[in-house]
Amino acid sequence: MSSDSQNVNDNQEIDLSQISKKIGSFFENISTMIFKGILFIKKNIIVLGILFVLGAVLGFYIDKTSKSYMSEVIVTPNFGSNSYLYSKIDLLNSKISEGDTVFLKTNGFTNVKKIHKIEIKPILDIYEYIKGNAQSFELIKLMAEDGDLNKIIEDKLTSKNYPFHQLQIATSVKFENESLVKPLLKFLNTTDYYSKLKKEYVNNVNIKLSQNDSIIKQIDGFLDNFKKTTNNGLKSSNLIYYNDNMQLNDIIKTKDALISEQGALRLEIVNYENIIKDISVVNNIENNKGLNNKMKLILPFLFLFLFFAFSILKSFYKTQLAKSKL
Image (cartoon, rainbow, N blue to C red; front, side, top):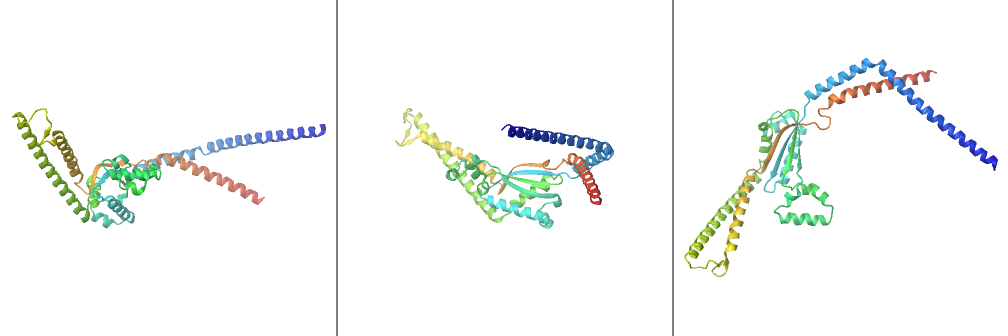
């Protein structure tokens, strides 16, 4: 038993000794690599400095000459033209990708080679979507019972029907509103079918406005007559009924409701100005996403990395060549 115990202790001492040597060797290798790295940098300090400055200068030049801009337009499609809007943007994007300058110039765009992409995405606002629309509210509530509400809100089919959408136009130069956004809106609003719908919608709203004005005048006339009869003592001032069944409160509420409806209809007329109505336009936002405007930071370190990589490969090649000769 004592002999076995002695062997175990000896084996443990050997294992610990080997581990200690490996750890020491590891740190020694690290120290050697650091030292060689310092020597390499010292030896090539001038080349490294030149590469760094060259990368910075080239990066500044690229950032200055290859600007990227983004113009954003928020629109609302009227008369159920949401799918039409998306299909029009898809068509325009395909023409830009194909480089169809004839099509773009025919539709009023200028400097077309500097237009790179037009994207559309819905503004996810579920409250605006269901506001004043009982059917939309019930539909969302029904769909939410069978799935994740967030997924439903972001679903492509659902989000396409939101009232507001953002158009993003990527360009490589600054554009004036007249040479980019106006031709785009004109292109989107050129459609025979929806132009006819727009005419009928506006006509219906004007008819409704006229009818409501007529009803409001009738109510005002009725209230004036009632006031006169009350002042003449023909009706008691404590009574709120007319002809034993019509309440004045109901008449006044009806008038208030009509006035509110008139205000909403006048706002609709403003939105119905165009099939695709522009809400806001922001031109020429400098695009700093991704690698844009960052080359002056990237290129110096990229040049240094490539130099280090080339030097390591060169050293590796020489070592392996020497081994092969031996």
